[in-house]
Image 1: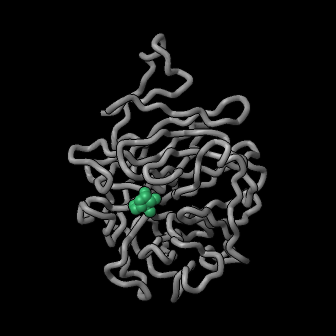
Image 2 (image 1 turned 120 degrees about the vertical axis):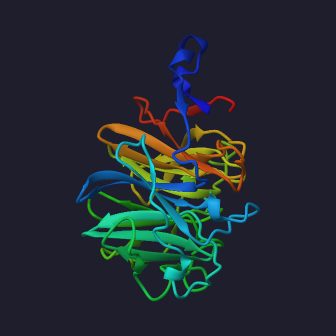
Length: 309
Ligand code: FUB
């Protein structure tokens, strides 16, 4: 098990405050999309994931996604395959199933799926665990169809603001954002570039894994800086940006990718990411892990320092 030390406690005198972190499942999985959904049986945590256990071990070539559920963020159940790429009739059946996203609106669960590296599909269901069908007859984002979709429209992340407006973030090497219509399955306007000031000065680049969350009126745009990547963040006053670079949240891991999502629940904040902590783990055999997240008085995110595994 890897030990975890919040940076502000990372001094010898307080080393005893270190907390243990461990993967949520013995099954290889990555690219967490965590949510708390109210269900008929009561609320539960749902983590949609890339399924590294079903890839070749040499590349991220799985064609299905995986779901893990928990009542308390401690005990986790492997809830199986919520869907695979064959749900999307426009996709090749061997298309890569990468970092997924989910959202709930108006009684329906939406699943955003990067398929094959050049398209993002959207599926819909009445239940969070199963029953997903294509919400359209074509891709929601298509590199060949949509202006400014970028080189690789992957890693979708959805944010719904307090005014009800939904936004879709995605992209490799250049972050993109586009508004979604109320149906959550149609783009509303042009795909825009996400502007992040201060990256060059900090010697950082945008790589992948965009994520947007809001806290106390501050909009946080986090992402991975590349391959390997640090998880870093920037802040702004609007979901559309511009954002200003603020700092590192998670440093380089011993794998080629880093991918985060942040979840607030009942006054507590958590960051979900993947590492390679399971036996046999590595860049294509990753494992989702959770750590507590804390903020400074100036709205900065405190860096999480992981000691050597
Ligand atoms: O899992 C495949 C890719 O690796 C994801 O799309 C990226 O975010 C990286 O984690």
